[in-house]
Each structure stands twice: as C-alpha cells, then as structure tokens.
Image (cartoon, rainbow, N blue to C red; front, side, top):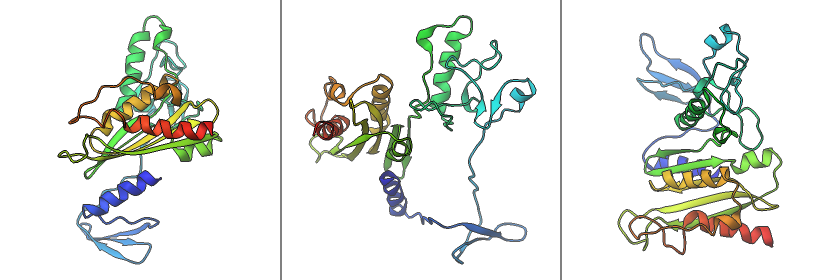
Length: 264
C-alpha cells in the first residue's frame, strides 16, 4: 500500500487533484456535462467525465457453445484447454488462477494473454508438458508521471490475507553509479519471502524506467522457485550508466535484508 501512496504523491506533484474515500453522487448538465457533485458536497466544474468501472470477460460465445464458464471467464486447464478438449481459450475471456493459491483472480494483461497464447499454440495438436501453465503471477509495470512502478506475485496485503508467514526485505538504491550521474533515479524495492525456507512470494518496485525489466527478473525468480539465499548469488552484469553499483543491486539488497530476518 505504500506504493499506492508513492503513486498518489506523484499525481499530486504533477498537478492532479486526488480525492479518496469520496463518491460521485451526481453528474450535472443538460445537453452536455458541466460538473460533478461529490459526496462531500463539493462540486467540480468539468466538460468531460471519464467513467472507469472495471472490466469483465466477454464469454457470450463460449456460453452459447456449451463451454463451462464462471464469473471469472471460460474455465481452462493448465494447457489452455476448455471443457471441450478441442477448444482452447486465452486472453481476457479465459479464467485466471493465482500462481500460489490456484484461486480465480482477475488479471487482464496483454503480457498474460501472450504467455497463454504461446502455451496454447505449443499444445494444439499434442500436449507438451514443458509448456504447461502453473498459474498467473500478474507481473506488470506502469508509469505515473515520472514514477515507474512494477509488481509481481503477491503483495503484502495478499500474503497476509492468504495466511502466509512471511518476511519483508527492502532496499533503496540509485539506478546508476555514482548517484550523481544525470537522470539517476532512486529505486525502492520491497520483496516478500516465506518465513520458512525463504521462498519468493512477490515483489514491488518503484523508481525510474529501469523498473520495467527489473520486475521481470523478480517474476522469473518467483516462477523458478528461487529462495532468497539463491537469489542473492545471481551473477549480474553492471555498468555505471545503466545499473546500480555491483555492490548494491536493488532487488539483491532487498533479498539480503530479508535473509537477515529469516535467520534471526
């Protein structure tokens, strides 16, 4: 949730007014919109309202075809097969299951759809076990103003809700070395590991544009079953203009921080 606070702070920094715990009770105007009335009693003058109320899978064709469908999408197995063995489903219309809990979860991301499509394509005519899909990590990156954010696997709130016993590792480093170099950005890393065994559960990153690829490395580690102790021994390449110092890669430093708590 502290990463949400970072995003909110950046929005305010670039001049966006953010209203939380506030509802829109009325959109005003005759022939066109001219304002929005909030639950606080405040009225905002506006000539444009964008309504973002979420998305849901379009499963109408699948339902008409007799395929099994839930509110999360078309039921599929780990090879992307539907309830009909000759019909495959991928993308936003297909049900997603969490990598750790196997519970249905919404994850409508182009990256997820592309992974599913690769698996479906490899398994269309003969099942190839090495292409099976174990569950959705939901790796994503976004940019708010000048702040880049990324997440993979479970965030702390989800880990707590699911009853995992976990430890948190954190780090703050610059993405170039020395930090005085032009366009250097501070990177905030937060990684989650199981208390027993130190297995990777998830991670969040905030900083400059390097976040986009850094979060993919975290996703790889989770999917590969890495522990914190294995992760800190990854061999890495560095360059002053491109990466943090070799002594302080953001995610490796966060994993080191977590290890101290695991073995204390």
